[in-house]
Amino acid sequence: MSGGRTAVPVAAVLEVDGFEPSLDLDLAEAVRAGARALRFLGAVRLSADEPRATLGAVRLLREAAADGLPVSWNGSVGDGIAPGLLVHLPPPQVAVGESNAADTEEWRRRPLRGLGDQRDTGEGPG
Image 1 (tube, rainbow, N blue to C red):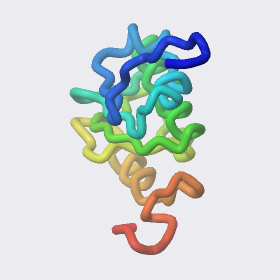
Image 2: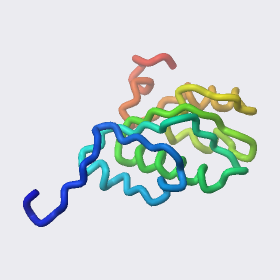
Image 3: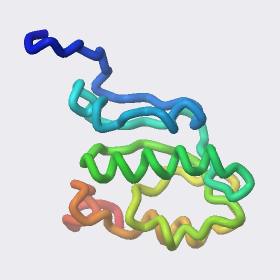
């Protein structure tokens, strides 16, 4: 690559498995290197009982939203986390065993304004 920069090979879909390593992931650099979507592998649990993993997931969801990246993830919101405080972030597609399923379902129905979410155009399911 010209200009003395080192090319960082990145798949079009950046896949993340585990959140301790994701705390150090530079999502903006991955986007500059060609990432066009973010996918979490496995079920993600946002929980006050797992603060580092929750922080890693929320940070990546926030940064993906800021970079306009579509996100695919499945998981749940556990005790100690209020889904109503996360509505500015992409919700999980599928909820897995959560104690506050009604709140998370409301999160899924809300449009993600400005993120290219088809729900904010009236074309989606919500």
